[in-house]
Length: 93
Image (tube, rainbow, N blue to C red):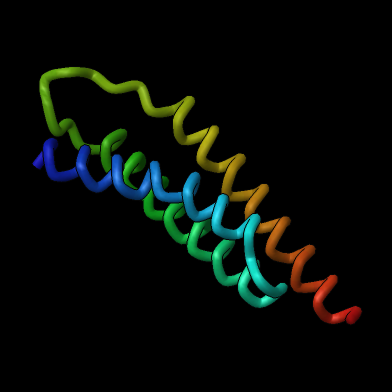
């Protein structure tokens, strides 16, 4: 179970970086919002896996996830704000 969760966290936790790069190269405001939303979705998934790791002991090693949860929460807030700003700017056009 621990290996499965670790793999899932690895995938969801590393996905926002390349997807953010795709968002930076977006072809339209809608494309940017869509790609940023994918980043946000992956960050929320990572947060869920981290909450599970904190709650359920899945291996011998003790993992301290509080700092990771804080960082993930900060990134979620940043991405949500960026999406909201892009949506507002799109409406002004």
